[in-house]
Length: 220
Image 1 (cartoon, rainbow, N blue to C red):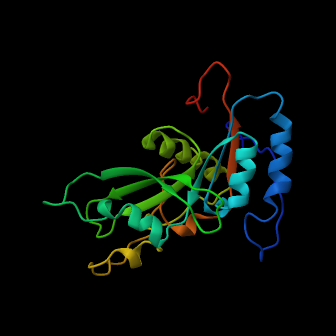
Image 2: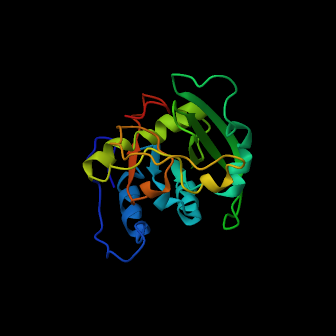
């Protein structure tokens, strides 16, 4: 777990045959306790390994804002189905980017929560790049995505920042009436880029605080 200065707050050594978020409470509780009485605004962001209702409830009980990557499923896809249709007209030479926000409740959740979606249509690609974030922040969708993207610095430090810039594999079966995409080449991940692929869930997260005088959106 890293703070906003890219310093390690706490870590845990896990066996290779357990989930990457195994033992999250033992790590997170001690870090939160360290700042509970001294920092007023605290935030947490993590990848899809931390998409766990127990973690959401824990952070909400601590009055912490959070943004956590949420794996795609058919229900969340249907919520943004209108954004998954290929844009009409000639293919653009620039990226077309769309955002959406909706209320969602998985079967394992005790209550609905806000989910922010980002959809990107890239030139020369058949399928859009899609990603979801579950959050309790009330910020506009673009700012929620920007908040989550700042995980990129921590990803660089722990050397797991290489992945494939392609649509979430869980999304492809839901894109009806489209043929399969051609193979895509592996590309180096760009810092602070919001990715949609499920393979990015490598179990890293960050916790940080705002200085009292900076306001809710000064996240450094």
